[in-house]
Length: 83
Length: 135
Image (cartoon, rainbow over all chains, first blue to last red; front, side):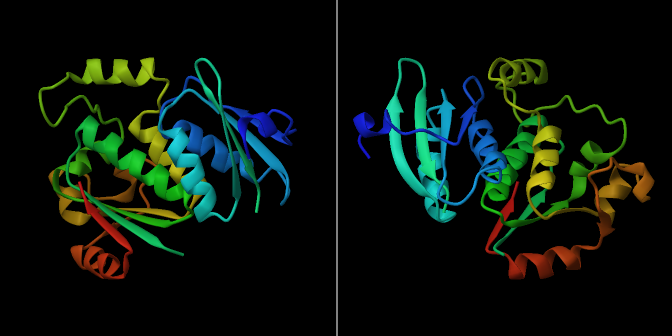
């Protein structure tokens, strides 16, 4: 999805991992994914550059659908749909 | 379940932290993890151990811990504990490592240690592992 399309996405769960370094955001996502249902969307907020690669890669391995990234000034918003 | 086997031979902060970071990555992937504590690494897993050495002189332990705090990053023991919460992790202490650390009984070690083993167990586990790392 494009960043413009993602602006309209409503996440069932938002994980704010800003301010934590690798592997913090990935672990936060891993812990939280169990709290939403298949087909629901989770948004991960991260200021760690590595997360932009970790979350898409992890989503693919775990059969979640990575939807895309919105870049904000000092952090990124990453969206995935639980598989 | 894919499996990571990690052999840790040093009780230094940077190597313990490296092991913890790798373990959390494997835990996020739902891998089974077996950690084998070898030779000098036994010192880090003794009760009341003070871990204040680095494997090189790039930073002091205080500087390293300060960086982890600044980055809001977990310390090595927290990373090990988080991995145990997330996936199937077994931490074995090789009996030689225990002897070197003057710790030969389970009660001599911190709670995250699961058993004391011989090196044959490491070889068998490494043979079956999808990833085998020596740190």
